[in-house]
Image (cartoon, rainbow, N blue to C red; front, side, top):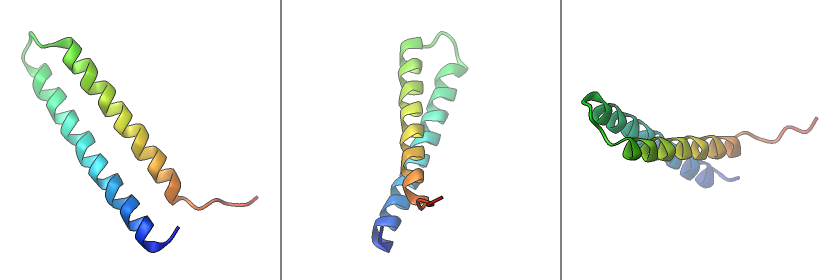
Length: 68
């Protein structure tokens, strides 16, 4: 992986982290005042988990393979 690809990957990870945090804030705001839409919260949490998985997948690409 060259420097440009690595920078693009790091940039994408940062974007996903921001989106993950934003979703966290939205979920917290929605659930502050009952009654709230449980289905909407469930979908947001699923999206948040999907973003977290994507972050982990991209981060693993940044780690060089170590030959044992």
